Length: 237
Image (cartoon, rainbow, N blue to C red; front, side):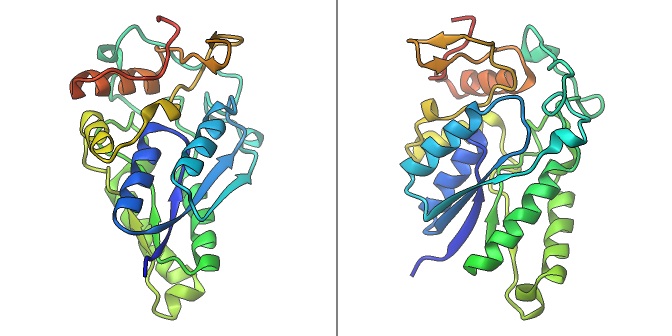
């Protein structure tokens, strides 16, 4: 009998690959996405497509408004930084696209969800190589949260240990893409862009990614290094 697992699903490349990995490992996935005040809802549309494609047991989209705090280009009116190439990205400091405490908030919701469906595993697509300097993507953070999770829940004190699974944490973006392609992931379903242009469409339906934000550049670099083309359309196209 398959085990239940919560998969944090943003609709992006990494979380979709994680969902595919969980399914391939025999887990029965429950997906969790967030409408948290981000700049656009395109990623949630992608998350719904991905969840449907993988026939998840249940897909919850939780509403929380992190715009109440701001502090990030993704949850305020601060402009999303743009660059001409991935070579322009630096690892100096935490970028303005970091959303304060986002993974802590998301994992806390996932922990509550896990208790209600009696899942002992939570999958999250954090990455410590191509992670844009986000502090809540580091292995030591994940280990600390897992320790807290097993102190803070009824399941934990009753001996049902919760494991935070991070299968991508030591992979490059190219390795993640190759892994997903080996699993048959259709990356055209996914969305990574932080700042799609208003009214920009391809074939009158699908928004075009900007191609210049940190997330787009890391994604494009990954596809290039993986030796394949990104199926998502970009403004430069």
